[in-house]
Image (cartoon, chains in turn cyan, green):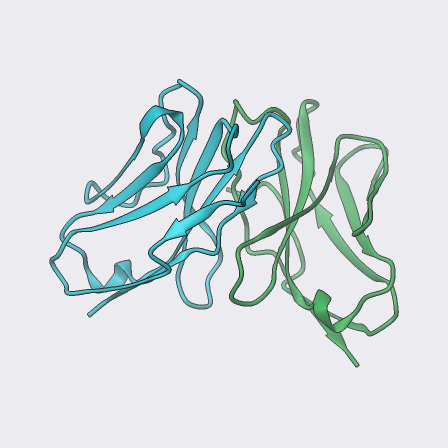
Length: 112
Length: 112
């Protein structure tokens, strides 16, 4: 089937606005991860969903960031009151029990 | 805390073997060693993983020392397309336990 799909691929927003980023994982994958990558930097873990367990939110940088995963499938990452330092590529990945994670191509967020 | 130490960068001549080292001296008995790579402007790509035995697939070989405190990823015949940042990650094997946390990785440059 298709790989991990993220939308939009690019998003430009004004400082202070809210944004929603979407991730469609591979069908049947129970684990879903969100990361962000600022220009020239490594991957920063944000949040991890695994089945029906409570998500691991330990990487969320502030309470402006939140994520949901509805029906164990699609996930939405929401950033409220965006700041310029939120500008980055936001990457989503999913995996099954083998833990081999497959990544989407990311959403490039630019806050102006 | 990514639990691994890798050189910041390495060069390799095209057609030669690329040997990328990783130290993971605090690895636990139930933690696997995973390797991913990220080619510029793309999402990370899974390469290989192992527990204690050496592993080989169509992309690479993974050599893990007997004490499991270090490992080496081998790309047998590096090409220009192998230029990427390579990440070594230790993690409990089943997806249900812990998120996938990336360190800074090794930037491999394959030179013609």
